[in-house]
Each structure stands twice: as C-alpha cells, then as structure tokens.
Amino acid sequence: MAISSTPSGCDIDPKSVVDLVIGMMAVPGRSGEERQIAGFITDRLREAGIPDSAVSHDTMTRRSPIGGQIGNLIVKLPGTRRAPRRLLMAHIDTVPLCVGSRPVRKGGLIT
Image (cartoon, rainbow, N blue to C red; front, top):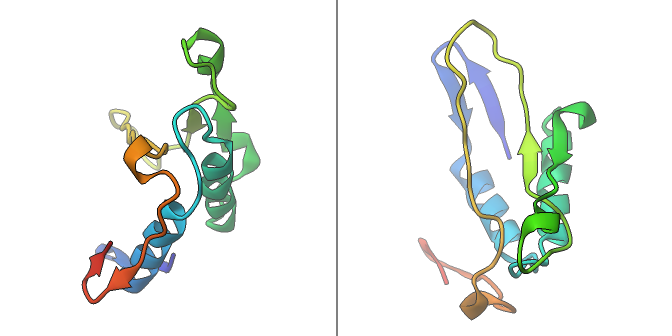
C-alpha cells in the first residue's frame, strides 16, 4: 500500500488500498483456519517496516471451543509521544457464506 508521510499526516493511494482489500478477500481464512490470512497480513506489515519483534500471536486457540490454527494477531507499536494508548481491532476470518468466493472489481464496487 502506498502511504507517504506529509506535514498534515498521511497521503493514501486509494487504488493501493482497494488492491490490498481485494488481495485480503481472496485469501482463504474461515473461522479457526486463519493462519494463511494472518501470514498475508504479517508479510504486509514487514513490507511496511514493522519489525518481527512487534508482531506476535496470543494463545486464544487453547481457550476457544473451536480451537484454531493460530492465535489472534497482535502488533504493538511504540508511540511517538506520551498519550493514552490506542487499539485497532478487526476480524480477519471469512464468514461462512463467503468461503471460496473470488472478489471482482466492477467499476466502483467489489462483488
């Protein structure tokens, strides 16, 4: 994804963001089988300069009734100033209805 720092924050290339989302949607990752999508995300984080020491997985697979291939992906980044911590959280698994789907861009829509 093309992100460049500017005095006002970040400039984000919308095409790169859409390409990233389509790429992520194409990676298999039904609930309990998230190892491949977690790897995809980890690879993108490394490409963005995030060190391996900042990336880990918890042990949720041992406590979850469905088990799973890999724990939750956790990325801890140092702040640049003293302030409250922030959390970004999202699901990376695929809902059952969409398992096996192939995302396609049609104009301004992804179907």
